[in-house]
Image (tube, rainbow, N blue to C red):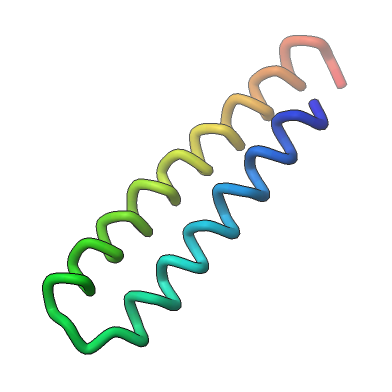
Length: 61
């Protein structure tokens, strides 16, 4: 489970960093790219979190 937590934290951190870059850049194309990265990383983090919850339910934690 620690592996899931580490991956989840990494994805959330990367999403936050991409959001910061998106907000700081003035280039519209870069803003769009980093906005898509934020969305994708957030979805991945949500999926990892859901997998963790499902695993806990399966083993009865």
